[in-house]
Image 1 (spheres, rainbow, N blue to C red):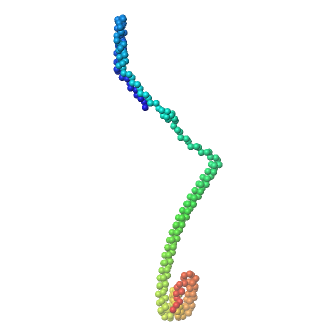
Image 2 (cartoon, one colour; image 1 turned 120 degrees about the vertical axis):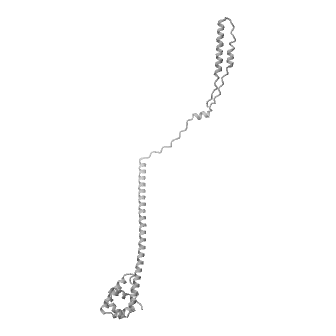
Image 3 (cartoon, rainbow, N blue to C red; image 1 turned 90 degrees about the horizontal axis):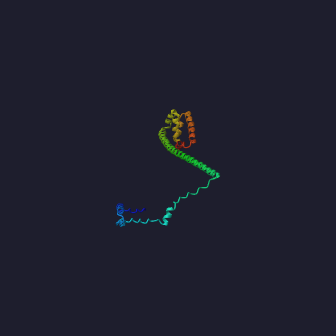
Length: 238
């Protein structure tokens, strides 16, 4: 912090100096006009003027910085040290690092391909499972429809068979002689053996032999097919 010294008052000093100068000139003129004249009291004017001039203010002592402050001001700021440089990489190490990087890239690409393939397989498995469920449900519906159809057919054939079983054998034989062969086979196959024998005996011999041979052939095919011999198994009994 700089210290400002008080300036002396210039106007009073100037006036006093001019008055002293005027007195000196007056004394000089008087001595020149009157030789041997004693000098007037001009000499006292100068000391008076000097006494009237206020003394200059003594400047305040400037505070000098201490040794610690001087050392702090002189000491340069510390520059941060750079980290030590890495040792140079040799050609073999660079080649090894490049080979490792290439292998890692290959492994990443292979892993991405496997993940994509697994996603495709998972999606295909889900679609296949959904399709299997649809086919299973459709198969169940078809089997239910087929069973309902068989039950309905059996009910229809059952009513027709019961009708012929209640008829007299000769009357039933007369109808069977002219009945369609496929219909006759279905009826005879469902009739009880005790009811079918008198009817066959009353039929025309040639017609009875033909129907008997076809009935045996139909039952042989039915026995060869699994689950298809149920109607033939129900006709035994009284």
